Amino acid sequence: MDFNSTLTLESEPSRASLKTPVNKVYLETFGCQMNVSDSERVKTTLVAEGFEVVTSETAADVVLINTCSVREKAEQKLYHRIGRIRHARQSGRQPLVGVLGCVAQLEGDTLLAKPQRIDFVVGTRATGRIAEIVRKSLNARERRDGLVDLGERENEYEWAVAPAQRNSPYVAFLPIIEGCNKFCTYCIVPFSRGREESRPAAEIIKEIYRLKEQGIKEVHLIGQNVNSYRPRVGDGLDGYRGATPFVKLLRAAAATGIERIKFTTSFPRDFHKEIVSAIDEFENLCNWVHLPVQSGSDKVLRLMRRGHPVQNYLKHVAAIKASPRKISLTSDIIVGFPGETDEDFEATKRLVEECEYDGLYIFKYSPRPGTPAAAVTETLSEAVKQERFLELESLQRKIQQKVYERYQDRVLKVLAEKISSKTEEDLSGHSTCHKVVNFAAPVSQLGRMVEVRITTAKLNSLYGTMLN
Image (cartoon, rainbow, N blue to C red; front, side, top):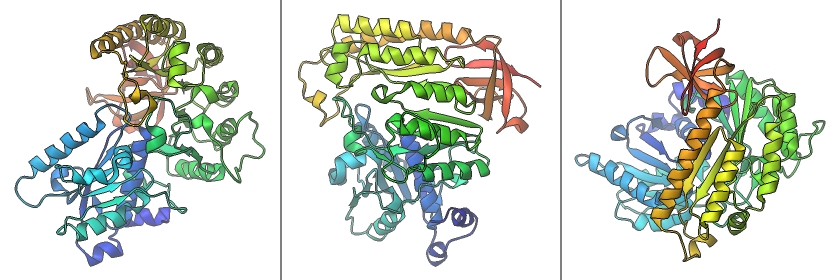
């Protein structure tokens, strides 16, 4: 699919749409940046193939739900959502409902047997065939024979996203690696997303140049483990310094001159101190690292099969904290993992205090069917998990308040991304260190990089005054 022709198809009816009535599609996305990125490409494909993407499920002929299975009860959330969609259309023709993403990949054709009436299932690597699947499902709707596609991604898969289908006109998500080879004992991703597969570097750099030409200000290099990046052939990174292919890719991406580059998520086992060196070297590599630790106990980390002891993790943190650019550090932690004792939890609290995270995503352990940890029968009670969750949340809240207060009177570079959800007098955006910053400014500043002096530090955001 030629990218420029996609733009034309958005404003002019395609040949397919001239032959048949235009079918309206509504797409809802659950989960992470990878799912958001997948949904952007699904919408791009559908529009190019003559479908109309609508913003209301009640107006749609087809409803697509892009699912995430990382959290517990993902399937129940999906079924509840479909039930509400069906209930809302009690009179008139029911829409076709298709399930995409991780739950689709894991559950496959068993979803078709559910009473919620799912019409077709599309796996994580079959999204390039979405238009064909939707058309076949529309043609077969009277026969009620559901379609399932869990196949591999086609060789000529189109990664480009039409500007009109992005969540933001100024920020773009750019996948550089898919899947995961780590097989942490609690994680379903290697089963739902497959093994690690890196995109060619030359292809990624070409796409960054294209995004820059389209006016994109900030690119997020995304993947389950971005610093595990290992292109197979023709990496296109000759001439760039780096101890790992990911470091070379960062330097090559920075050399494009695009205003901002962020990356997530980093895996501690593959993190290299030269990542920090690259951030120090290039101003457009943003000063933010998301480095999930999951636990502060070596015993629990071994049970999780993370492959990084606490001391190694703290060496990475020390390198990050030593940067003159004041790199923001965020992380993930799971509480209540099977076998986690009071002593293990205290070790986690000590690590959180030592790292002083700018932000922390805390999760109560929930078993994912098919993972090794799910087979463990001796688990902690929900009451204990909830107690530890609240205790760690309270600790992080105190730490985070102190961290945010250090930004008082500092000047941050902020990308003005949208009108604030609280007042139309303010704009909202992210700093280079990935803080949410709200500030008073006219709408004409949207899409611009502005300097904001911070006047108020809140728990999860900053407020400031835009400088002339």
